[in-house]
Structures are given as structure tokens and as C-alpha cells.
Image (tube, rainbow, N blue to C red; front, side, top):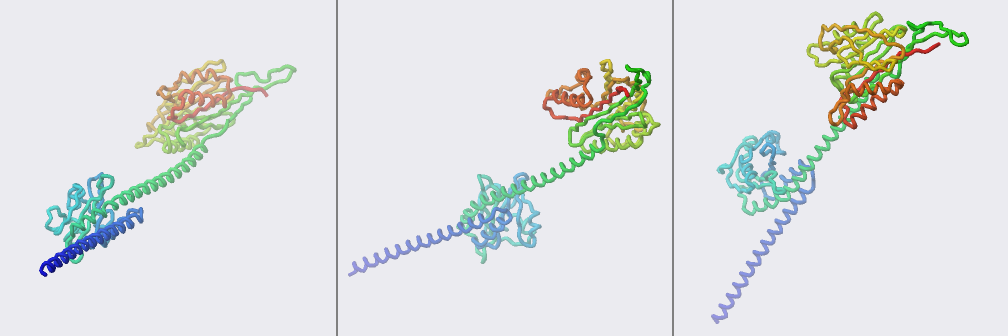
Length: 482
């Protein structure tokens, strides 16, 4: 009988142990299922948005709910400054919290970011790593906390922490393990959101830059049109009956008398290095049979040079009178242009040509020496007394020079964008090449000569970027019969 009772007790004990073991497995399975569902819940939340600010809110709200904590925060790492910062802080004092910066290693969050180790603290105030910098700002007492690193692709991008277990309890080791599990998908989603935010900022910056560029290009096109509007277009032709030194009323075959007529023609070309530039030219009539012409080069390029050029051209045309010589004109214009604090100046050459006599009075303000192609075929540089460029010295007195252009002679003015044009080896075009071209093209008409000069420079530079504005002015004095 006793043996039967003993056997029965053993059987009952085995059944109880088996039940307890089964119940333990069941509870463990339930806990594991619960943990899996919590992680699934987190995964759904953090993958429901790609925008960083929305994602941070979801991370904090979901983490607080799952771990039954009063609050949660995400603190990001600023790699450039080696600091941690709150990209998002909720509540009335959120703005103050966002101003807080923690050094790497400062406080519990800084220690976690520096070491990459998770931490569970039951009494924050007693922990030697504790920093009250944030708590004092928000007047929020921190009792217990969990803090884990956010690691993506082997790099710590921030820390995730939860504060104060509800009902005054402490966080458990299992809570810490759960938070570490939450941190893994959170870090990936957070880095993706940060990359997306950076991409959005880049796209916005690109759109802003593109819009500004398009607006600037439009303004530059308008500026180009305005600048080109200052310059004369096409050629200007002046004539004068009764050429000095020629016999009028000479008899032709058949007894008809003919009259020699002097003809002066002016034509120019300009090509700025940018949309607008500082080279300029002008030509217009003074009285019935005198041609005034000018060609200049402002020291700078772009908008500042274009403005200086516009002022200079306005002064030249506004001050020139029939009684004034080129030297007197430059002296007067220079007094208007000179400013003590200005760094702008312009080299300039201007002349006054009498169509009938061929008398050329000119003044040179530090400009490139013009070339004269004589009717005989000789090519020579035009010499004379030079002055300083306009705008360099306020009391500069510009001198007049005089020469005669015979019938069949041609004068060519140009800016240093021609002679100083460089090829890829930084060799300059130079005066010799220009002289050779003018000799070769002496029979060409003005349009052909202007085109050939620019083409020859382009051939020489062979694709090198145009570094300076180019301008050329050609004046011919010829004769015809009436």
C-alpha cells in the first residue's frame, strides 16, 4: 500500500514539474511573441515616414509607450563639431532644449555615444556620468533611464534614451535588451531620413541657385542689350567735295569735267569676354565733314567695367563740341571720371578726322598704338605723345597729336584683347602677328578685315578661353569721282 502511494506521489510530482516547465515555456513564448510584436510595431512606425522630424516624433512616442516610460529622446551626433544635439524637442521648452549641445563623453548620453555601450541607470543623480544640463533647462527630474547607441553601418549616429519607468519602478535588463532591439531598425530608418533631408536641402539649394542663375542670365542679357545700344551699328560714311591738293574740274575723255570726292568710312566690331564688358567704341559726325571716333578699354571686365564704360561714353558724347580738340575732350572727361577711392580706369584713343584735307588730330590715353596701312602698302604704328589712362590722375593734361591720312590710307584701332590673346601655352598673339595680318589683308574691305582679325586671333588661341574683351575700329579715307 505504501509503495502504491509513493508511486502515486512521484507521478503527481512529475506531472506538476512537467506542467510548470510547460507553463514556463508558454510564458516565455508569450513574452517572446509580445517582444516580437513590439518590435514589429516599432518597425511599422519608423518605416511609415521618410521625413526626419516626423520620424523622430514617432520614435519617441513609440519607445515611450512600449517601455512604459514617461519620456523618450533622440540625441544626434554632429561629427564635424564632435558634439551631441537635440534635433527635435517637444514641450514648452523645446526651443531651449534644442540650444543645448553636449560634448562627446559629457553626461550619460555623451558617454554612450563615445563608448558605444548601452547603460541602465536606476538613480541618475547618483551616477558619476550624470549631467544635469538638460534637466535644469526643462525643470524635469530624471530618476531612472536607459540609454543605447544608434548604430548604422558601423557608425554611431546618435543615442536613444527613455526616462523614468512609470509607477516608480526601475527599468529591467529585459527593458534594456528591448530598447537595444528597437535601436537597430530605428538607426537605419533615421539615417535614411537624414540622407533624404540632405537630398531635399541639396535639391532646394540647386533650385534656388538655378533660379538665381537664370535670373542673373536674364539680367545679363538685358545688360548686354543695353550696352550694345550705346555702340553705333553698321558703318558710317562721310564725303566731302573738292579734295585738298587735287585738281578740280579736270577734263575726262569726251570733254566732261569731274569732281573728286573724299570719302571716309568707319566700321567696328566688338566681342566681350563675358556677357558684358569694358571695351567700347564710337564714331559720329562733327559738322558736315569731320569724323570723331574713339576706342577704349576699361581696366576691369563684367558689370563694373560695363558701368564705367557707359559713364565714359556718355561723358565723351556729351562734352564733345565742334570747337573742342580730342586732347581737350579727354582732359575734361578725366576730371569727371577721377575719384580718389576708385580703382577703375580706361585706356583710350580718340581722333578728329577732316574728311576733305585728311588732317587727323588725335589724343592717346595710354592705349594700344594704332596701325596705319598706307596706300603704298606700308604698315606702320601711329606714334605720338601719350597720356595716362582716364581716371588715374585728376589733373592730367592730355596732348593733341597731328598726322595726315592720304587718300587710300587706312587706320586700325584695337584693344589689347587682340595683341594679348593667349593660346593654351600662354603665348601672346602679339604685335608682329597683327602687323603681318594687316599687311596680308590690306586689299580687304572693312567687313572682311574685321572678321579676319577676330578669326586669326581665334585660330591662334586654338580653343583657349577668351580672357579679355576684343574691339576693333577701322577707318578708311578714299576718293571717288562725281
